[in-house]
Image (tube, rainbow, N blue to C red; front, top):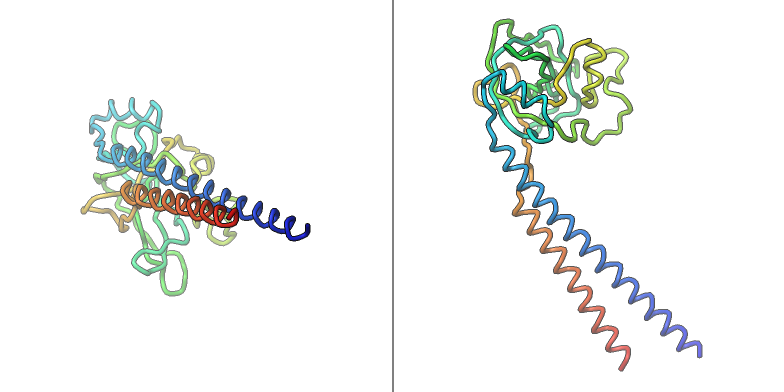
Length: 240
């Protein structure tokens, strides 16, 4: 009687384990496939080049910012040179440093652009870099990021250093508006192009291609199906 009970218990546990594995694998497959669809959409948006006519740009910025996420545009204007921040914990080509953040007043645009100019290597003594922005008008090629601006962080507020108030842990649009008193467009822009100002651009809107996500989806699907087949045959053997 005990042997029968043990057999039923082990059979139940094995079936449950196989069921859980199959469900998890299928869920991961669906998640990766959805990620592939999202990345394909993002690549489509990344290929959008916005008009350089300021009036039309202003109208686009006033509409849903999600619709222009990852779009690119060129704009001329000047930096607000006294407004400089350093986004901490960046590593590019094995070198630690910061992303250089500043404000840009574009010609004939009403509000101010928050711009990530790119990577600045950290000085040897881990002090903040000494940066001087151009005072003359410049033309920037920019890419918009209107989603997941904060990103993953354990920090509880953007600026946590008591010694360096321009050292940031993450980007928060309301933080910049509050401390500057300026009206800032509800997105971050990233410097692109070969003719760059001050820092080294390194932003990539799409890190993993849709094809890789689909490959991972297929992988998880096959693992789930394999687990189901193995579980089925093990159950059949026990029934014999």
